[in-house]
Length: 309
Image (cartoon, rainbow, N blue to C red; front, side):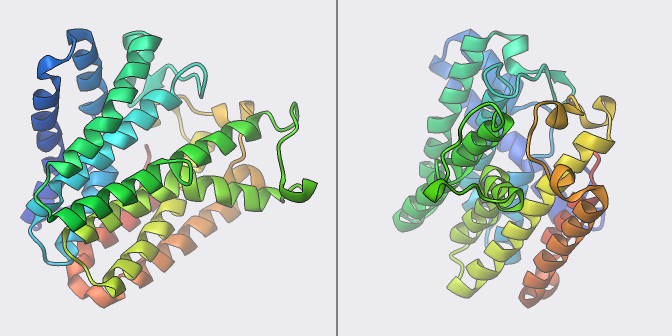
């Protein structure tokens, strides 16, 4: 993922730093692990990828003028949680995918039980990464709370559950408040604000916590994170419709076949693309108080609209 030109050496470091830090942590965590489990963790956690969430965390910290080393524990934790979610999402009981980032999914490369355990292992590793960071105790506690909220039943896991229920909506009775079914637009928004958006918003918040940001700065960064989180999912849905397996590194055209609730399915391709543009515009507006210091975050927002994988 080339986001920053050669004129921005600090940001080039931000792009490369998550891999080296994940490597260090994985080597330490895996010392007493069964080799097959350690191999599965390395295969998944260090696979080629954007590592968008840790990069966002580090860029938020940079935007606020803090030392990037303060945010490394939080940044690595975000990627560990994201990686676990991908491993589990790819399982036959979930999305049943054979390809991830251009390679066999973890359960295809190893086996289902090993993949489940690799995902399980990454969750406590994430919180250990935070707690082993350089923050003061109150910031460590808050970082754990933010990540737990974003990754749990009110965030990513809850969104994934509703996403799975949508696939079977016509075959089963879904529980609805007061017995009234919500319109698809509202269900779609609820799913992806949690399934995708919560972790992306948490990424910039964890960078802000590491930088000891003011409440005003956190509010602005949270608005930015919410906007790009929704835009990211819209583009992801569009890629499933318009792109190819060779470009995305994973199977395409599966959302409609599985009956998933998607932005193109609800709004159409043209309106979905316009929505993504509007969300990114709102995100960019939220960065105005930070002036040139937020240039890295601005480039991420623009990249989200242009990405091909």
